[in-house]
Amino acid sequence: METKDIKAFGTEAAEAPLKALDIKRRAVQAHDVEIEILYCGICHSDLHSARNEWHGTMYPIVPGHEIVGRVTKVGDHVKNFKVGQLAGVGCMVDSCRECDHCKSDLEQYCDEGSILTFNSPDKHLGGHTFGGYSQSIVVDENYVLHISDKLDLAGVAPLLCAGITTYSPLRHWKVGPGQKVGIVGIGGLGHMGIKLAKAMGAHVVVFTTSVSKFDAAKELGADEVVLSTDSEQMAKHAKSLNFILDCVSAEHNIDSYLNLLKVDGTLTLVGAPMEPLPVTSFSLLLGRRSFAGSAIGGIAETQEMLDFCAEHNITADIELIGVNEVNDAYERLLKGDIKYRFVIDMASLK
Ligand SMILES: [Zn+2]
Ligand SMILES: [Zn+2]
Image (cartoon, rainbow, N blue to C red):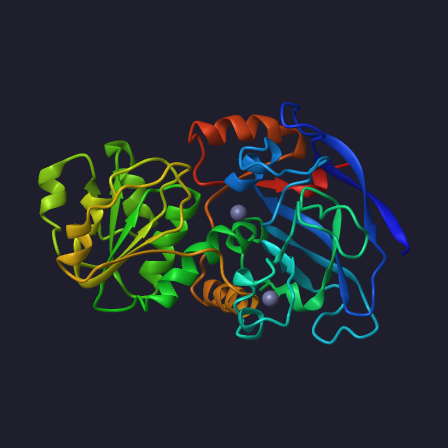
């Protein structure tokens, strides 16, 4: 298959810093859209993958799955995209398209495993897929999203992962007006969870371990902020929440949150702590509560989320960086020194 050489930013080893690399993209096929990448968000999973912390990383790796750009070429059979339009790509670039989940707009749960934007087998070129820290990407139109020109494009990029990861469970568990919803943690995911739950009409209670984040939580839209290490503050919310979105990726006490749920309430994890989380049976039994998890969202739902954000004027709060600042950004990410998402200005990749 014909290919095109482009510039990218990635690494050839877990211990090595990211640097400029040359990669190949396939020539545009009949159903493909070629996108010049303008902005790419930095997700924590980029760092985990670059450093092989979840194992199985194939090198060289080019991370990045919060991609926003402009269409530069379309294949002959492309129906929904035109050259010059804005377009986005999230965590997936393909899936089997045949299984029950793919057929019900749940491609993220494809039985064969969806083809991720980076570090998944590339069925076109062999080898593996390369992500958004690059000049351009070629993706089948069924996995490309429409992006509104009403919003700040750099702030839209993180919606493609952090946005859909929080939107999907809020929708699935039918968060809306009249409900009290907890958001645990105020990072890349949590800050989107607060904005989205608020826009859906819920009364939003934010839980944090740091008093210094109270003002920030309120600015993001929290109706109440609770210091989770203060048992008196926690006790005030006992058995009162309809739903809790848990955005924490570190070890934490799940029972203390389950006990804040009403009867039939659900606590859903979107963070990914590495260690198992102990749960006491009575925290679930007494109140018929559910402890659940959720991963990104399907393509149709991702489009719904982007349209919802355009309608409600929602973007991520970001710090825009040049590609040469990515290694420093990773170190800052580890310290939690970011409000709330780094986004790379891909024009800096020369
Ligand atoms: Zn991500
Ligand atoms: Zn499938």
